[in-house]
Image 1 (tube, rainbow, N blue to C red):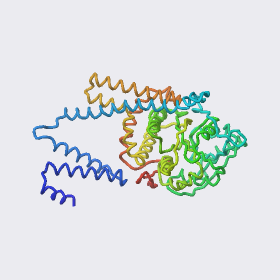
Image 2 (cartoon, rainbow, N blue to C red):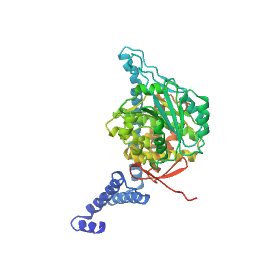
Image 3 (tube, rainbow, N blue to C red):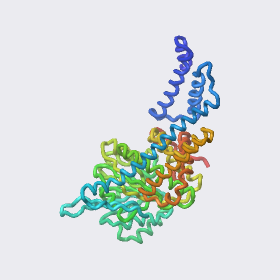
Image 4 (cartoon, one colour):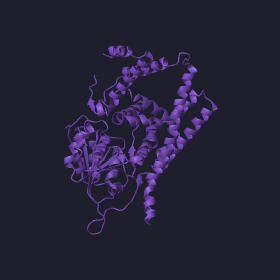
Length: 482
């Protein structure tokens, strides 16, 4: 059909028009299939699309003009120059976004003539002590909270993480843990926790029932009937918090919406883990803060999510997010689509990273990047400018390692480090980033590679299980022959 259509158009139009027009239709078809119909585009089709574009560009050159190698390099240099300039602007906007977001409580307090809110970037988190809603007797109201933590194996420093939740300065809360296997290695840790903190209601749910391909969401759904309170506070199993965590969350919690938290690394043994830690505060968090400043976020982070049972039921319960890889992202998205608020807390929790190999680091980052690409393709594409160090180096290289190229590379690299310090260290209180700031440029080169690799391949691995990414970020389990 395509061939005869080509001949038909060629019968009434010049070849110089037909070839570019046909190529344009082909490219639009591929992009439409990928980003609108959510079809899986394999590597060969992407390669074919690139070759079609490149071939048409060569054909469309004037007859008296040829594309020399020097001309090609010049065009590439300009391309990376534009991306480098965009990166520099993005870093400045990130600093402004962080200052605006975290400084807002002090400005409001000063305008009201009140003492500034207590903000401390210490080991346990970034704490904020705003007023709570008043109860009937004029005192502060502390609503009871159910903390849900799905488990799959014992994480690094697991006991210390869970003990931080048992030490909350809060009148009424319970902790519900859940596993999908009665032989899970995390069960002895919870048994010890129950013995050491008898004053805290701690439950352990063991159930292999599944409501979808995402095992974490299935575990959460199995835990839900044991949650006795209306407000649910869901945390990843590697999260550690300070004693005023629940108070701070409940103070900001929108009863008819969702609240989520930024996070930073609390421990990161080994260089690959430190590379991941630096990326959290200097790459991930700035993007979130820019989105927040641009009009608010429409996604959530599994590190910490507060939601009421009523709101959860409104979006379809856990079953609505069970088919997806990025379940936290989808939960926030569904809440926002329901017309309810998605709020970003100023409380920063800590994630305790285990020791990673370089391979493990790349696999984890690739899973994350592919999940973002599937759920928010334009967001993933735009995240390219976060890797300014790598982009400015490519500009430097394609400028023939000129002095001006070196100046651009050095300037953008310095701006990148300044942004990492202002956002990650100053505002998020990241001690690991503070002591490993020079890993940020190295992280940028890894991130550029991972960003590119995320466009190819649909397989992701999570805690020993392999899945295939489908349309709209949905996943299907994939059996691996051994």
